[in-house]
Length: 123
Image 1 (cartoon, rainbow, N blue to C red):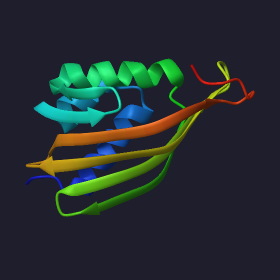
Image 2 (image 1 turned 45 degrees about the horizontal axis):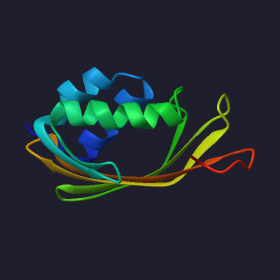
Image 3 (image 1 turned 90 degrees about the vertical axis):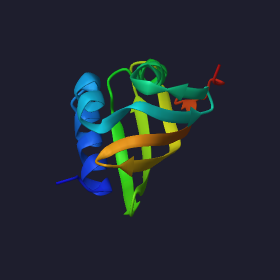
């Protein structure tokens, strides 16, 4: 039986919260997933790894808050934020959207803004 969009997204978030990117890729991402973000257009598991690395540079300890998960058919949306006290960085207004087909993420858009908690300008 194919997993629902909500089941896929919940497992994706569980894997990420556990720091298990490779498990997330195996279980939840189609090998040819398409990703769109401010970093450009990326494809496949290597694209997910690349974008996850950028996000990890802002919040290396994975301290995220998942505020809302919405799904309707094969489309899903996550509203989130993150912070890292070690480097005084916060991410706000995070919104990812997803398309799930046959139990796998086939497309994702990623948006977030970062700022320094101490008021320094972001690079």
